Amino acid sequence: MSNDGNSNDGNTDPRAAFGFETRMIHAGAQPEPVTGARQTPIYQNTSYVFHDVDHAASLFNLQTFGFIYSRLTNPTVAVLEERLASLEGGRGATCCASGHAAQILTFFAFMEPGDGFIASNRLYGGSITQFGKTFKKFDWHVTFVDVDDPDAVRAAITPKCKAIFVESLANPGGVVSDLESLAAIAKEAGILLIVDNTMATPYLCQPFNWGADLVVHSTTKFLSGNGTSVGGGVVDSGTFDWAQNDKFKGLTAPEPAYHGLSFYETFGDMAFTTHAHAVGLRDLGPTMAPMNAFQTLLGIETLSLRMERHCANAAQVARYLEAHPAVAWVSCAALESSPYHELARKYLPRGAGSVFTFGLKGGFDAGIKMVESCNLFSHLANIGDSRSLILHPASTTHRQLTEEQQIAAGAGPDVIRLSVGLETVDDLIADLDQALAALD
Ligand SMILES: *Cc1c(COP(=O)(O)O)cnc(C)c1O
Image (cartoon, rainbow, N blue to C red; front, side):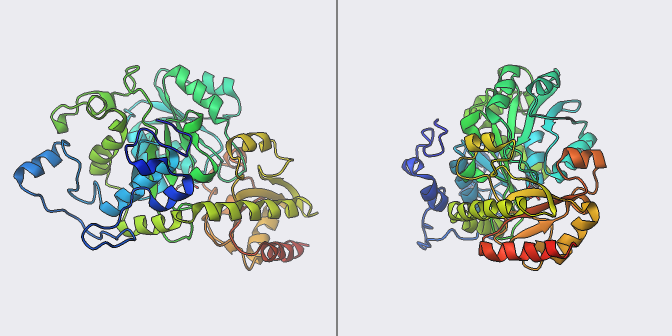
């Protein structure tokens, strides 16, 4: 299978050789065979009639692919899964209720009580809380590491460690992970590299090209692109050897609920994706609603166009802020001044995304005043909307972290996060300009 993002040789569908923009619109979808409906229908439906008892038995035994019950699979969600897999250059995808659900589904496939994994200390604040606090209840243990330091990553790998988890482009701080070198470390240790590609999207970054094994998404953000639908997904490259050591018994050992089949032996490069549906969604239950899959598919149809404008607007706003006297610093990988500029040119050649942070000389109080003074930028906790958004993380998304964790995550008291939208850029700069003037 080629992972160059423009072809997918492992897929026998001839359309898999099409370019990225063509696959944004067509991958996974066909005219509906009964009515000819061209847009993917919303199958607002829970269950599917069996042809006969033998058909039902083969579906339940995982001998035939098909639809049984929408907790496991749904035709609208299945189109989104194929589309996401195609855009990432992966083998299969599993969509679910949110980005956080995707992270639980991902780890659930191979973690046992007592196991651990390494995660970047610069992640979306919600992920730091989910990994550091809630995962402990499953007896899963995270070690947060500065992933810019390869020696620190190697030193944190223990016999119980199953994976390294990073964001390609970190939320919020304009930090770019060195995916190729992290993949080499993971490969040497026989563990997974899992990349959260939410902020970059597959249009800006293709983690599988650099050796990642699994990609997770919050489809809530740029993929849906319009602030309507919470959702998530995990894409499998299909290239990880689950049997290379005894760490991944969840996928290699006999599964009693399915007559002792081993997912890896039976499904090969579809082992993870089949397991995520047949065990993960079956037993954890965080299903994506068909309506949300439909909204997300609509969003993906324009992904490349939106990301180009997001990136261009964000770079212009960042340059404006960098020159403003009330601004202490701007952390945006699009700027030449960023220590991550070179990594961005390598991993995000089409643009460094539209979410970045800057610091106000006036600190915490100025941060609060700034978000309250904006008119066009909406003060809310989301990113990746067509509308421009502003947030003061220390008083909102990152308030559950200690100040030390806030600073490590790039979300200290003086920090403002922007998600630059698709509006006329001069209007966005004018709005920030009047809000900054109000700080004096
Ligand atoms: C929003 C976000 C998540 C969590 O996704 P939800 O859909 O809100 O559950 C995970 N990672 C990143 C980078 C995010 O921005």
